Amino acid sequence: MNMYDIIYKKREGHALDKEEIEFFIKGYTDGRIPDYQASALLMAIFFQKMNKDETIALTRAMMATGEVADLSAIRGVKVDKHSTGGVGDKTTLIVGSLAASCGVPVAKMSGRGLGFTGGTIDKMESIPGLRTTLKSEEFISLVNKVGLSVIGQTAQTATADKKLYALRDVTATVDDISLITSSIMSKKLVSDSDAIVLDVKFGNGAFMDSFEDACRLGELMVEIGKDEGKNTVAIITDMNQPLGYAVGNSIEIIEAIETLKGKGPKDITELSLTLAAHMIFVGEKAASPEEGLKKAKQALENGKALSKLAEFIEGQGGDPKVINKYSLFPQPSCISKIYSHEDGFIGSIEAKTIGLASQHSGAGRVTKEDSIDLAAGILLNKKVGDTVQARELLATVYGNDHIRVDKAALEAAGAFNIQSSKPQSNVLVKRVIQ
Image: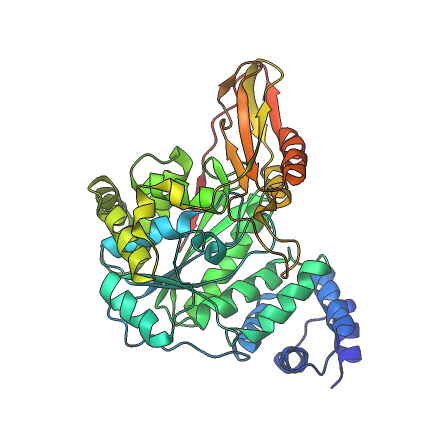
């Protein structure tokens, strides 16, 4: 067996067998297969696609390259939540706090971000003192005590995915259903949770452009999860405008806190409650998603979820005073404002354009070696459907490099489409796959 034959076989549109996929994953992880051959196979997969059996084999081969976490000491039905990524997606701490306050243990391993903003771990590190690297015993102890802990992935977690994702990122092979599925599920399945709730996004700010592709991705991930004994649910959600108003790192954490105070944007609140409802259901703390939603709303309204966030922050060494004192977060030294040039209605806001502008302000990375400005980002003043007048504020760009901030503001201004008539309202949660 050799890589030339495997590349040729997939290039010609034939299905790879389990042994060929294992040969590739093990060889590339061990360093025996060079980047140029791995890149060639990834591109062949991108154009010729993989069938369901190939995707399952790829996921299992990738799982085998890393350590499987042992969270058996955590009491209760452990539930993990994962998003396929979006602009302004700050739901992790919101839904984690909601679910944990309803008795569901949430033991989550998250990553750092390449792209629009930092990942969940980067955003959390804008909280003064908060630690994202914990020993296994401390992680488990926190989940048992608080109900929620979020840490960074270890170097031993799904080793193949780390190498492959870095290669996909620079070879334009990220947005393939089989490659996305294997990347996500290889990490989720070794994290040792009992159930998984997936937020699968589509639109111009997501990996999947169309609703149909997002459904195919969700269905495949649910099937793989269930085949591995995990109760898995996928929620298909719209990502054609930024979620909430904040796109960045510290400003997204502030918006998450505001949401737990009951003062968050409508879309973030709706999505967070929906995800939490299903986490509470699969975590066996509700008899149905509807009952889970009722419990999540109660936890939001009575302040239990906000108190749970404070417990989580303190448990991981952070300063819980940030919940009421936002000046403790990293502060920007540069601000640039974007104003409307005409009257009308916000017809659309290009999520991808806002995301890239946020990245260029300093909030995101282009390469893994890049540093992130935790104070940088974009705060929107308007959402799709809102009325707007000429010279009214559309958004504010923050950062600590005035050249980058000014350029990001010019870029972000192009994301707003203003029209004379009010657009039709859009449904955020499109489908639930169970």
